[in-house]
Structure formats: structure tokens, C-alpha cells
Image (cartoon, rainbow, N blue to C red; front, top):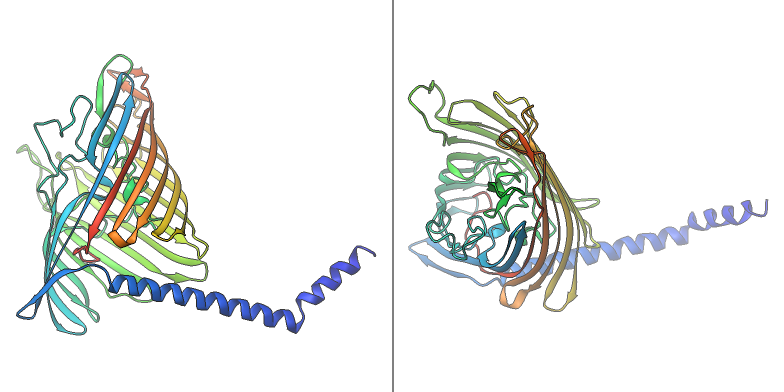
Length: 426
């Protein structure tokens, strides 16, 4: 009985009107704090540096970024340092021209050109300048499309740009994804090649680590108006497969994609999520279906969690390609300069058939990483430091299982931006 009475008394105390009032006051304080933080964010966005002008009722806006880093990577006998563009958020120049019909309707165009002089997606051991012979990303038109945007009817765009499925594996509120801690874990070292213990050149890293959400393409895209944070997208893109003259090309000209998006505030914090389905065709006109999704939650405390997954159905291939990603992070205004962000993540994927087993099992790829980012808001800069580990299992060359040394990458760099011109859906 002596143990029961104190517990009963404590329960009564918590049920008292005074405690209920204190709890209401505390909730009110938290709500006021959230509202104040939102006001600060809106003020910062309003004060963001702009390079824009109005010409005959058309607002012309210029933007861009440079994301450069020093990368040291090692795998097997290879050990090298590079100065490169971080493909996690590639350097680019951006332009938008927009005419506003009224408060609810606008139309315009967007052009975004890659400025990745030495992309981490192209570098390889033995060279320090994009292998000297090719630079696939420099000058690439990431976006070149027109759009019509209506609060009532939605957003439509035609031209080069994101499909409905693009980036649906990358819903991420951690603030570290651009540095190399996003679900596309290959971004920071994608061009580097793995070698097995016998010296065989296998393939580049990005051939083994893929979230399967697709690429930008020449497409027509429609996204519905926002409804309580939800929107729906659908696109049709030109097929990028070729033909050897013997393929049945009937109906193979367009590749469809559909997606569901969510972004908003909930009782547990800010939430961003996406889910997509897309169909593509290989050069032999075989059909491939992919289901991709991701979700991220950011709590008021700064704690955040992100997950992503994908699953493919490749015609003529027995093994199912899959990818899984998870991340825990924390962000806080520790310094007066801006947010400080930390994250740790893990990736597991099976989507490379070229070096799979004779029985059809795909190569298993694992990666984990630690990243730290410090924002310097006054100069529109985010500095970062990161480490990423890559390993492969189940690699076969000429039907013989091969041992492959793990790859490690250490990077330090910064992303400097002025007003991004890119549309939220483009």
C-alpha cells in the first residue's frame, strides 16, 4: 500500500486543473515559437539576393550555384585526391522568364545549364580533369522548357526537364543531401571505377548504386494544384532507347510516369514524401517498371529521419532490382551564422546484372556515410565535411566470383548560391 499511495497522488496531481492550465500554457508557448520561426524563414526568403528585372511585364530572373569540393578516394591500388564539382547538387546557371496574367496565373520558360567543370560523376582514377577526353555534364541543358502555372488548374510544362518520377526517391528535410548524404549515394564519387583483386576494371561506382527514380528527359508534365499538401503528377517522356532495325517499335515512343507528392506540417513535424511509378524501355525494346518512394520528417527539436526505397521489374531478368536508404539527422542554430546539420545514413541495393552470378543474383551494394554542414547565411554559403564508404558483394567476372576491395571517400567543400531560378516543379 505504501507504494500505491504516492503513485495515486501523482496521478491526481497531473489530473488537476492547475496542471492542465500549465500544459495549455506550454503548448501555447511552443505554438508561438513555431509561428515566430516561420516568420523568420519567410523574412529570410524575402531578403534573399535577387538578380532580376522587369522588361515589358516579363520578370527575368537569373540564378546559379557552384558546389565544389576536395575529394580523396581510395580503392584497392588506387589512392587519389581530386578537386571536383560535387554532383550531389551540381554547379549550374539558371534563367527564368515569367509573365503574370493575374495573381493566380503565370506563364514562362526556364533554362538551366550545367556548369560542372569537373563533375564527380565523370572523374576517374588516373586523371584529375574529367579524364581530359570527355565532360558529359558541362553545358548539359538540365532544363529547357516552357510552363503555365495556375492556382486553380495546376502546372503544365513541355520540354527538357524532370519527369513526374524524377527525385521521388529524394524527399529529404535533413539539409545534408546536397553534400552527398542523399539517397543517391553515388553522387560524390560516381565516376570512380572499382577494380577486383585480379586487376579487372569492373565498372564505375554509379553502375552499382542507383535509386532507380529515372533521369531528366524531353517530356510533357502536368501536376495538379496543391490540396492540403498533396498533389499528383503525370508525365510522358521521349524514349531514350535505340533500335538495331529488328525491334518492334510500335508504341515505344513515349515513357509514362505518375507520382503522388506531399509536403506540409503535421502534428509530429514537417513532412515531405513522394511515391512514383514509371515505365522505360531498353535498347532491345524490353519494358521495365519501377516503383519508387521516399519520406522525410523534421521535428521541432531538429531531429529528422529519412527513408527511401525502390523496386524494379526488368523484363527478361529473374532477379528483382531493389534499393533501400535510411538516414538520421539533427539540425540546430548552434552558431549565429546559420544552421548546423549532422547526419548518418545507410544504403543497400541490388541492381547490377552485368557482374551478377551465373544463377542470376545481382551484385549487392552497401554504403554508409557521416556528414556535417555549416550554413553561412549572410554569404549564401553552406560548407560541408563528409565521409562515405562503399562495398560490393557477389561480383562475378567470366562466371568466377571475384574479391573487390571497399572504396572510401573523404570530402570537404562548399555550395555557394544566388537565387535559384528553377521552378518548384521543374
